[in-house]
Length: 389
Ligand SMILES: Cc1cc2nc3c(=O)[nH]c(=O)nc-3n(C[C@H](O)[C@H](O)[C@H](O)COP(=O)(O)OP(=O)(O)OC[C@H]3O[C@@H](n4cnc5c(N)ncnc54)[C@H](O)[C@@H]3O)c2cc1C
Image (cartoon, rainbow, N blue to C red):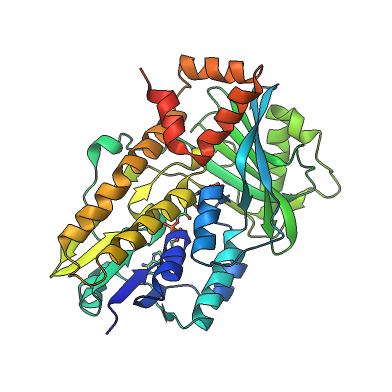
């Protein structure tokens, strides 16, 4: 008989886990929104998936969105000054999670994965754990459902370091060559421009990372798509004239009424395993590894950890699933998580002088510009640059 795995949460982590595990185990996915609610709901992310993540999605035969704009470069601006365009080693993409998740849920259902619709409550976990050989908490940033212990040395903040303000817009001409564009306004925050695929076609995501109470933290009290559009227009005029020049005012609008979000994240890292009445419970994705989105790594980290979790379970396919399996999973992912977490946390502070020097050199040297772009595809390289003595 196949071992039974329960996965709670049908987001980036839960879906990849379901795809990877469904052939060897008896998988049940617990989710609380139907596909149509996800499709018609609010945007969730800016979801840039770098090449290594796309490779994992291919490995597990996840659905591919072939019309997604291909992100090949990272444009970097400091204030109003364009510094450089670094080339990525592999193409990246961003596909509206509303579309990607709902299609993946349809696909998994057709492939025979059992879906259980209900919001799982913390007080139900014990009973739920009894029906599985392993239970995985992939509930995202609203989780975790269980008290996985916090890793204090990787969790330095007690409040959000940024306000995250995101809108999916029509009517913004893309940068050339097509890619992600980052503009840093020291002390105020950052603006990210990202080409993405939605059900209405290609859009430009405008994503502000605002230092709380700073000049970009200007969306308080916004209650409607129209107010959001107006506020964004004012911010572009005042702080990002280079983007405003590319706006077609007749077409500038959110792609739909739910295509904006505001959130703020207090990052934390938790040890992702515990035993519950003899059943191993593991965490994967934001429920246990939550980071500010400033480096665009959340989905990529979730995908990395989901693959390592798959490898761990496959290595112990025939042996008992006990705490040792949890310890092995944690030791496999810990070095990567440490690198991505420390780099991401450092990016929310003032940029260290050696990093500013690298960025200035990148403006004159294409090889260095490409290395900086590569940081986003390979966070341990960024960590090396930020933390080498
Ligand atoms: C503004 C913003 C921009 C971002 N940009 C990027 C980016 O460019 N690149 C990148 O890699 N990452 C980015 N991220 C982070 C990325 O979106 C997340 O890290 C990623 O989606 C995490 O995946 P997950 O599966 O852990 O959680 P999610 O994708 O959030 O999925 C969690 C799922 O669990 C379900 N769930 C929750 N509670 C329960 C429950 N009790 N019972 C049943 N189901 C439940 C939810 O409905 C949801 O479907 C961004 C995040 C934000 C906020």
